[in-house]
Length: 213
Ligand code: FES
Ligand code: FES
Image (cartoon, rainbow, N blue to C red; front, side, top):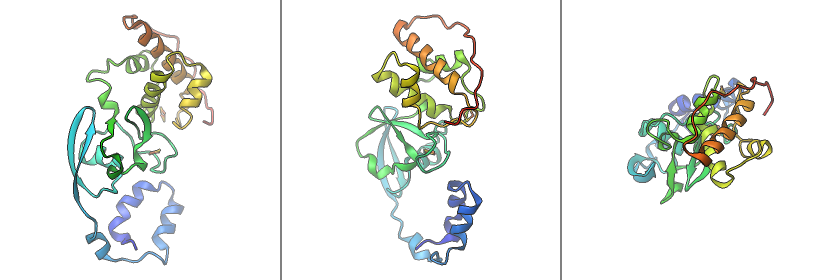
């Protein structure tokens, strides 16, 4: 049972659509029971983030995204849907891209988390440099997730084709439709990673499309 009054601020963050929010608000199966809230077990949990062993005091069921943003102040990772649908919250777990909105801190155990903050202190990571050079973002909200997926792709596939890029980043949605610029940025990052010392030169920007991915 859920105490709606107590959790409604969180529900309203999770459910972007009013209909779904109102369904939960009016559902007869939801009653207020403060014993449920009292029963949440706050535990000291250690997680490895960006090479540091950090301790958070939280319910083990807390999504990693909440711990990163609200407890550790790492706000580079974004909240989009909270349902593994948009990719805005993408981080790496032992080098593989995962959705931090749907992974609890209790599940991580000794896994190593890397967030966008862990790529570099000064935006010098080749993928960040390529993103800057190609001016890939529009509003920017989805881009840290896009970058984390691109970093994981390039680690396994240093010369990706358009199809490889589209496939690897298919779960990262961009409502601004920056997909052509993201493709260009990933290819530029591949060049930078190959040559390392390649100069950062201006690139002709592809037009933003309005694709439905
Ligand atoms: S916020 Fe995690 S996938 Fe959308
Ligand atoms: S740049 Fe705006 S959502 Fe992707």
